[in-house]
Image 1 (cartoon, rainbow, N blue to C red):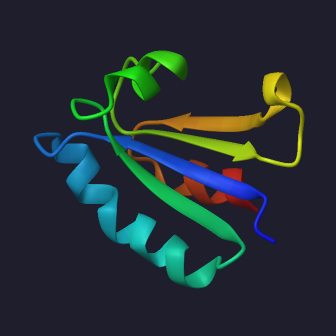
Image 2 (cartoon, helix red, strand yellow):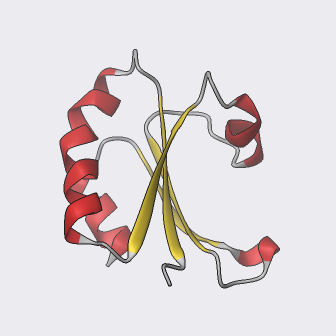
Length: 89
């Protein structure tokens, strides 16, 4: 069972979001134990508000096996490949 979920908060008009998209696609392939969910902030404002998203892209890693109030185990703000890979390892 995959307990790790990586939320990718993005916008279609966000340049850095498009730049890091191939990296996110690579994570989907190379890390099958992590479920990647892309969340368009304009189509899902409730999720953006729930996770307090103020910049794009923002990546939030959660562990669904933890209690609801402790699920977030880290986040990366911006299109930083090194920080994103450090987060998921």
